Structures are given as C-alpha cells and as structure tokens.
Image 1 (cartoon, one colour):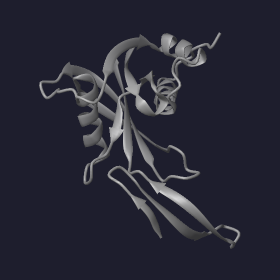
Image 2 (image 1 turned 60 degrees about the vertical axis):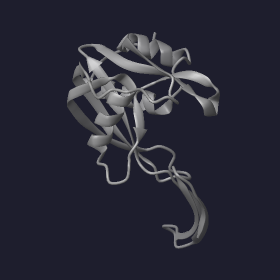
Image 3 (image 1 turned 90 degrees about the horizontal axis):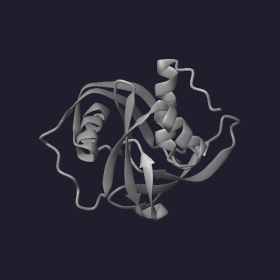
Length: 173
C-alpha cells in the first residue's frame, strides 16, 4: 500500500515473508538509485565541499547524484561529475554498488572511479548548490576521516573501495 509519493521518492507499507516462513509488515522507502564518483588525477583525489541543508552545514563528499528516469548509472556518473565539478572524465570505471541503508530503503548507490579528467564546456552550476572542489592526497583523506572531518558515508565507502582496489597500505597512525 502506497503511503506517500513525492518528486524524489515514494514510501509504501508492504507485507513480505521472512526466510523462516513468518510474515512481516514493513515500511519501505524507494528513493531511486544514485551514483557516487571518486575523480582522481594521479595520486590526487577530488572531493567537493557542499552545503547540505538537512544537516545544516558544509560537508566534504565525493561528487554524487540521483539517477534520472531511464538513465544508466554510467550516464548519471558522467552528468553528475560535470554538474558538481566542471570536469569530464575520459575514463569512468564501475566499482560495483552498495545498498545505502537496507533496513528501510532499497536505494542502490553505484560506485565509480573517474580519471583522465578535462574541464567540461557543458558545466553550469545549479543555483541551489553551493559547491567548492578541492584536491586531496589519500593520506589527507584518511586523516580527515579519522578526525571526523569527513562524515559522509558514501564518500568513506568509495574512498575505501579505491584503497582496496589500489591495494594501498595506508597507516592510520
């Protein structure tokens, strides 16, 4: 049973059967899928510092955004990279996906690494977004995570995936 439908998400109450055979009723939020992109230039990684109204502060995060209807994850990644950083990538590598909060939503977040970056002539900043792009080393990002300066889960996830794929041996000391 649908409870709410808005522009960005819809909410339903549904019954489902557990693996043990019992039935359960639960509220599920359907926000649609999204992407997160970690742009890199050699050893430098590009994050954005963006105002986020729900937490009433600026936060550091990897560029990201919601998929439009009919859009493939790769298309969304390229569009969001341009929209949020003004950069395009010759190389976008898919790094799988995660479920953001599977306890109440079915949102999939597709992970991408971007390289071979060039300024885009398609760039035009959204009026309602206050964004600053900043380059960081992996060591600095680790330091910022440890100090609580990066608190965005998708950013920590895509950075972790980057480190795993790179098989880097960064120390947290």
